[in-house]
Length: 179
Image 1 (cartoon, helix red, strand yellow):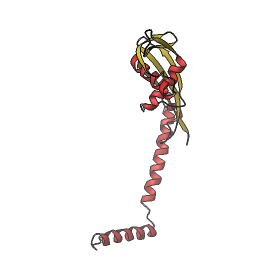
Image 2 (image 1 turned 90 degrees about the vertical axis):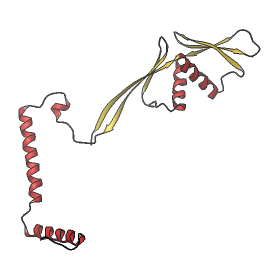
Image 3 (image 1 turned 30 degrees about the vertical axis):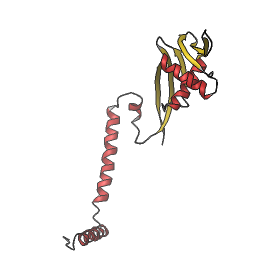
Image 4 (image 1 turned 120 degrees about the vertical axis):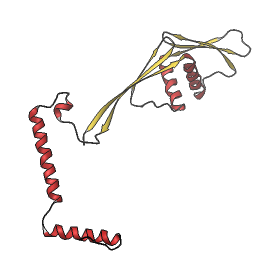
């Protein structure tokens, strides 16, 4: 059987709060989040996300800047943890939006055909011609005739087989045969 194509395109939009949660989770998983800090604030920058933290005992907050590559890795890690499906083979792009981060996932899936294919002209987006409709009708009539001929076999062997089946069904139903 031939393969079919399906194009998958999704857009994940993470508000700033969700993006910060993903970045903190990513840093903690990789043991890069500082100990005993308090989240002071966050903002979107043209090239990523800036998170301000305040360590205990310090007055001024410390800013940590995350590039879009790190943000993308954090989003993928976060989605895996939260069980949001992200196809491994999809192309991924990340951009800064007005209210958060947008990750676009695009990919092509190859699926195995489950049923008969469309006629070539229909698969190509063209309407079938009158000649192709007549050829399809003739092929359909021939297959129907072959199927009905196999069912209405007048040979004595076919009659004997039918009688044996009827007798077996009658014995299952209580021994009453109609043949």
